[in-house]
Length: 343
Length: 265
Image 1 (tube, one colour):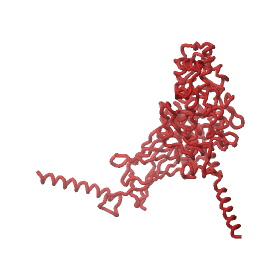
Image 2: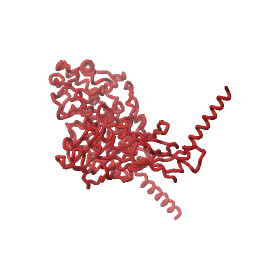
Image 3: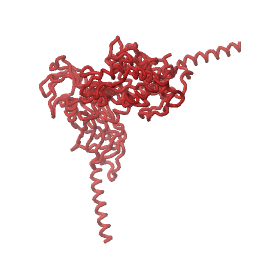
Image 4: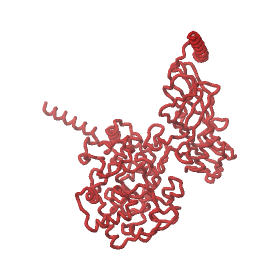
């Protein structure tokens, strides 16, 4: 009898405890370091200075990233259009579809090494990684939700208050805490272990063709796709169109006609897995992207000075070498990192 | 020589104390001889008006703008920030972290509380309509600046400084929307407002008085002075540009000092 009572008591305690702990204290998949400075990378943007990445902030950010509760009808999460196997781009989608299958007019960009970016979106319209998520959340053709309603939904949740408390010390859910957690998760998406990185670190070697491709890259591409981020983070017109009425690009933000048709230079890291390409996804293979620079550059008033001389001369053999080099920028460690995966 | 100096010092001292006495008599007659004012709270109450009448922001009342267009108001919101109180000696006291969102349809928002203002006499007030550039580039903010308040552009980061919306027969779709912002560049919508209390004086003396500034904001001024804005020529102004900047210049002078309460507690 006495023994039974003890067992019952223990059982009750265990049950009560497990009900309270909806969120496990530790997630064995999430191992440190979550954020680090890869060798050879420049200084970060500094936008994490007031918001250092923590274990619980990362977990909350990841939960939010994959939670369709952020959308009006709970149908779309960030992860819907930012898929890990595509380096968090939207594979095989020129543009993505938001709620009710509404389509936007721009290609979902891949997400990695964002702590080195100061502005976000193809036109750089968002000036801080913390406020960036509010763009897709409120865009009528993406999640079409109101920030105040998102906060209200999170407050009603069984587990979010506890997760916020663990991450920020208070279970009061605010826009700032929500977006800071998301910034922590997004900043932790670091891709720096491709074959290219291993060659730079001296732990791997390029094949002869890859090496030749690398030399071609250095002479033809690197002035904009600057190493090691593989982007100079600037806005440039790469000769896609003569007119920019459908999407003025950077000019939409700066209101300067001289910025018409300019878009942010995308990183070439993981480029082999992020098709289709360009700000509107108009080119569906890397081979055709190189063809664009070989024979498709449109000269317009805002064409980038580097491309103003006309098409690039790249032979078929060189093109193959270039493609082989671009493949060395794929980072399988990043694409398969379980810490970032939706479970 | 020494005596002369001492005499002058005495005269100066007496003169100063007479002036101080006079001051005290107008402010704290019950306690003559002291010039100490204690820090206290100051309230600013915004009264939204349309010309000479109180603004009805429910959309039920029609008003006429300077161009003769009929319109009603269903939303009128604006940011008041970086509040500075101007002391009698001309120096300014900047109220730290002063960001307030005034919403004509939210009575609670119309009264702004400035806590722990240094004691003394103040002759005026300065503030910004909008949100300074620093708070536009530093990520997610809280309180009045919470992006959840709906005064935030996410596609091109920045706060909306003033929102005026309603219906008007002058608009082709019967609606008009002015969302004014822009914290940088030629067409910035940031404007500074100076309010002069003269001849009134704001007296802050914590525990003894309740100080409150009453300011009127006239919605009709958004459409005029210096440049007439017509709903017919642009019923939706939501992009930063010459039109939005012109509207900001118009509303920079919509604030009129009304009166001050310095009520003894």
